[in-house]
Amino acid sequence: MSGWQAALADDLRARLGARAAVELAGSALAPETLDGWSDLDLHLRLAEDVDLAALVDPEAVWAHDVATSAQEQVVRLVLRDGRRLDLQVRGPGRLGVPAPEEPGRSRFLAALVAVKTGRDDRLIATHLLLELLRTALVLRMVRRDRDTGTTVHRTGTAHDALAEEVAPAAALPLPEALTAARVLLDRGWSALDPAHVPDWSGLDALLARGAADPA
Image (cartoon, rainbow, N blue to C red; front, top):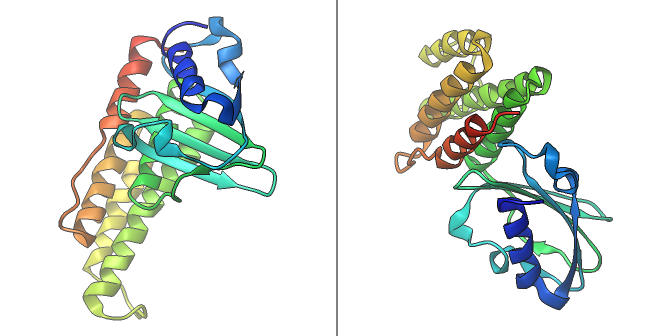
């Protein structure tokens, strides 16, 4: 293994020290398969709880996802520079990381759409894209409820015009559809929070990595 995956794996090992056993997994075990869409998969066995900030600068994390069961915790990160990191955690310890909320959750899904599109996995890419577009509709529904002061609507309102934008967006080729989804999501977030600042830096960096070394 060479490149950023090796350097990041070594850095995380050093940061964890005796608190964890670290094993490579996934494509890192077959360096010849690595490309611009590849992430770094690591299996961690933590002896104690560790704050994620001890491993990765929080300012460097653009989006994340967390799944927890009785047996393990899976933490998936998209960094602002486009690198992706998947951590499977077992043992008595867990990583301290908050559950993702909007807009971070949708940003993470957008990164997966980009990767699946880059790998020509159009089935999953389209499935995830539709979830992004559904979120744009949900944001508009929340705005409609706020504007009207009720969740009960006997008829449509002017907000229904968004449906006429979402349907054509879903029919676009995947790269263009993802761009359209970004616009619709930012509009929805801004409508609910005027302080919202669009930030697709991690996705743009990921797309650049994939374009530089395509599958």
